[in-house]
Amino acid sequence: MSPTKARCGLLVVAVMAALGGSVAVAQNLDQGKPAPKLFAEGCASCHRSARGLAKGRFRLTLYLFLQKHYSSGSSSAWALASYLESIDSGKRVASKPAATTGASRPRFRPPAPVPAR
Image 1 (cartoon, helix red, strand yellow):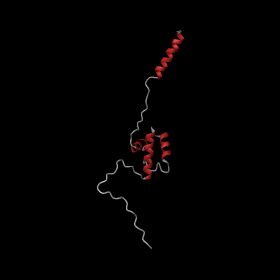
Image 2 (image 1 turned 45 degrees about the vertical axis):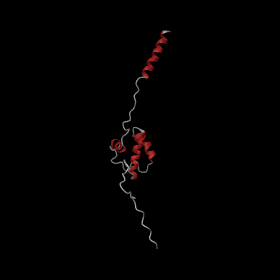
Image 3 (image 1 turned 90 degrees about the vertical axis):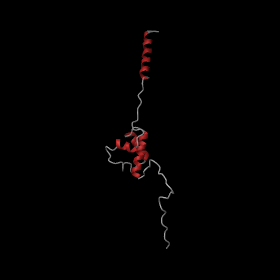
Image 4 (image 1 turned 120 degrees about the vertical axis):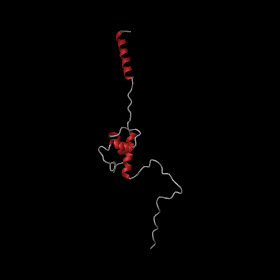
């Protein structure tokens, strides 16, 4: 084997060893955090309240915007978009189902009958 081929082979082995070394893995620091905490840590410095931020926007477009510009991952962007939409629509997602005790009564009464003329 000639010395130039040996050097070339050694160079190839060195490059492969350098590239095949330890690989850095990115870590999502927002994963698993509830949406109100995500808002408090990332958005509250510029926005006083979450109310009105999602008004007139579809959840998908809000999600895509947050994913591209503000969140560190797709799951946190979706959680934040859902949270902002729930604030503006007045929906509150209960964390635990309500416990029923005794006989369950309907929450709303039916409307009163219309008087006959």
